[in-house]
Length: 140
Image (cartoon, rainbow, N blue to C red):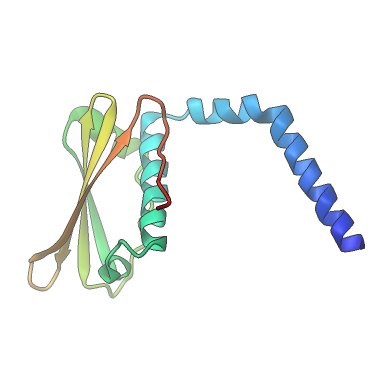
């Protein structure tokens, strides 16, 4: 019974804090720079894809990553905030992350190359809207 009361207290307390400070929490997201929005959207998106097994197994065998901005704005965004991508010291693949500025959106081109052969073995394009700062996924 004590455990249930503690959980209930924690739940009510957390809900109250969120309700009281929701405007401040929303402002934090609104005050993010475009580079932070892109990085966090990318990281969330890759987590979403990985959980649903849409990323190839070689995603976990990346040794290095190169970042390229296609425009001065995209290069600046990368200089401010690069998304975290887990690397493996003895990995066999290189990830090329290309960021393209497209006014109200950021386009990310991902290419995975086999380091030994130099062959491109996988690619993916993603678009992240910058206008309303929201990324949504259908859970179908």
